[in-house]
Amino acid sequence: MSETPDIADQLTWIAVDWGSSNLRAWGLDQHDQVIAQASSDKGMLSLKADEYEAELLQLVADWLPATGTTKVMVCGMAGARQGWLEAAYLPIPTRLDQLSQGAVTPTLTGDQLRVYLLPGLSQTRSAATHFDVMRGEETQLAGLVADTPDFTGLACLPGTHAKWATLEAGAVSGFSTYLTGELYQLLANQSVLRHSIGNDELQDPACREAFISAVSEIYAAPETFSSRLFGLRAQDLLDGRLPAGDTRGAVLAARLSGLAIGLELAGACRECPTDEPIMLIGNQALSQRYTLALNTIGYQTQHVDGDTAVLAGLRLAHHALR
Image (cartoon, rainbow, N blue to C red; front, side, top):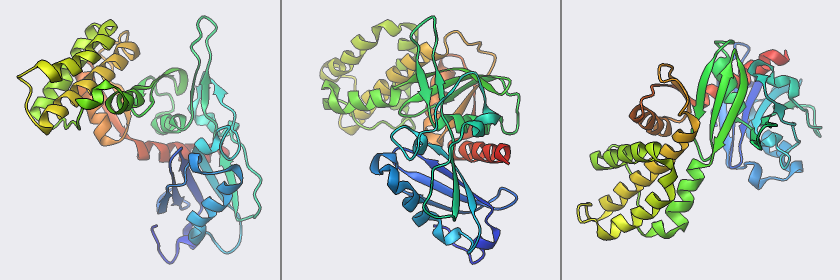
């Protein structure tokens, strides 16, 4: 935890990103500058509804002034049905500067905090059973439009469940979720491929080449995905050109990653114009991997750090609330 003697004198409000596995909190002053930050591994999966208030207070108690009530803007899984209190999904199209209109306020035992749980977004389509939801990513997208309210374009948020969102004049008009990260972990750790897959490092030339090749192959022929997966195991058994030792597993891991991400790209951006950059929101390492994959199939990218985006989105929600 960041500690300074005068945090309580400067604190104006608190921003919180409460995920499934952890929570992060930032204390902000009247100029929306971060003056304190803290984190915990007490995510939604490890808490009951009546435990959230105590966990939050334990994390931020040293920041709070002796009197008065501090506003707390919370995004993420704390607002899920199985979280603190459900903040119902807002149906798209939804303007990202209006998320706070769907916020809910849980009843607290004390008066030190006033908590606002932001909603997620939902999508249903009558023409096809394309149901989808997001919770937490909408606030990162809001951070994208904080400085450009009429932003229009395609954004990708890589992760365990990657989100692709179409924005039109500052509103989300459509989005899709791809279980790419989870699929990779399942295949690498629980399928027959676990005997062949190591840890890839794209800085290694052999891994980089394997990744790029796999992206190109599966983007051109996504219907071959299942066959190419088993081909990884066969390649391990038969291909004498593969390097030995740990490098062998790393190269095959890079190829598996390329197949999984390339399949995602085949569904997410095949019809998108290549003259408009795709906005990536997330951590540096994963965004670099997606940039390499997108560059391979002819797309350019721009990158916004995930923490920067979520803080900007929470600031936007706080301003709208005021």
